[in-house]
Image 1 (cartoon, helix red, strand yellow):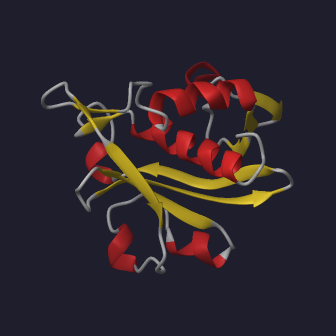
Image 2 (cartoon, rainbow, N blue to C red):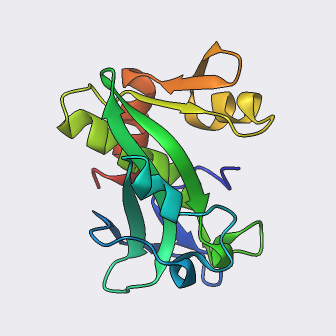
Length: 160
């Protein structure tokens, strides 16, 4: 679930916005790298998906991960997850989930796919993604973030 749409990440302890950076993970994920996470992140790399990790600037603690690959003219997302220390309303940072989708939009844009991102809702969150990300349901649980919605996410999280 996307915690909230914020202007970048918000430190919930101080209420202040923090600068972020992201990068594609170059090394395979080992079991200790996803301890406490809900998904087995070692599978994403094996399936040809690239893993991008979100960080607070100048800090090596992963705040969230998204796995995606360019396929069929879109960035296809396999897994997206906020780090365990950011789960729910007790998380350290708010805005991680939407920020991860903004990263996918940027990767899509860089690949010449106009920022379009496709994903399958892993649960009954279709309406939630429609409201929070302006995603469109194109088939049962299959969601797409089209260009206009991608621009909103990019403007909030990437192009600051």
